Image (cartoon, rainbow, N blue to C red; front, side, top):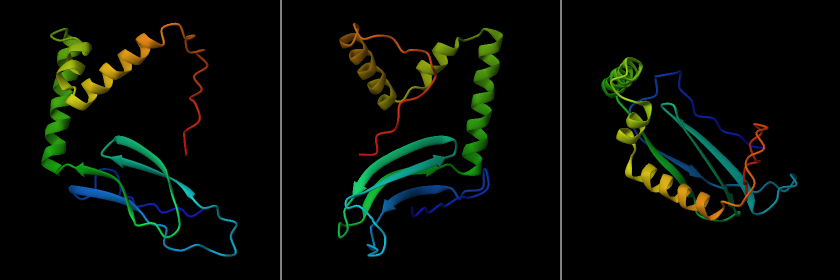
Length: 141
């Protein structure tokens, strides 16, 4: 299986906006490759793990899979200080962890949380998680 990794040592990725593309540039005749071919992209943008899966057929245009931003060193230091302050306030009882999460939630996270609540309400009769801790297999299709 072809794999390409683009990595920097921890904390050393240049700041900026990144775009991840997938391109099916050659179909090998000797390999028993399937068409369409499934792909998986895992991006770790300053600790924010994102996973994408999909399919690409030989001859298709290059596909933009995701974009993300890596903050500058100054922004990283500010983020670190803010997180340390939140931890201190939570540990001292000045603010609850739930309030920190609510304060930090982006509109997309709030929308996602509302969607999860709606689905959970609709599936109220479904059995609970079995507690095995085993995650479901990823959808590669």
